[in-house]
Length: 260
Image (cartoon, rainbow, N blue to C red; front, side, top):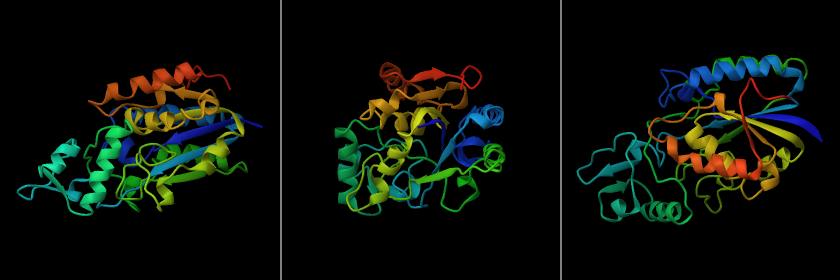
């Protein structure tokens, strides 16, 4: 069994750089700290796995997907509920019945409420690229004869995909939305899984929550609190998830305190 995998969640330009479409305040400093961590611990990292959020312009969480009763798009950070769609306050431009089922499933499965985001991490765009400081650190680690892995998520436009392992609501016959069993199996081969990324409140928290059915993996997590930040206004969403992870045995630490 290998010792340490570094699991980097969505450290992309749109989240990590101030001009980014969905910049997370504090993310620039998070990436600087994580870059230093990678360089200082390169010989102790057996694997680096990066996730990359990728979206269509027409995405269920982007403004262009929706119209109100007079044809206007919602503003970013608008919440859209099942009741509002049933009442015609907001109307999807595509697949109304599928969207209604999606919103029902969010409620019944205890997922985050549906929120509209600025268009971000568009497939093929500069905003979707791994942010340069992280990519440079990964390159320097890899040049010594190692291989990193990139896990792409979020490409299906009819479901959000916060967590690394599955979409918030998986879609039948859309394997890219369903539980990534190969990634889960890969992580079982490590004694320690070091987690960093953006945003703490959303994609990091939901990645961890998706592991709660695999408590033996949660117990291997070392969460670098100084290498992740929250989307402003959503800070409290993640707290129950991180608290439960600690109860499962996850270690909440920092890039300077962890001992590999």
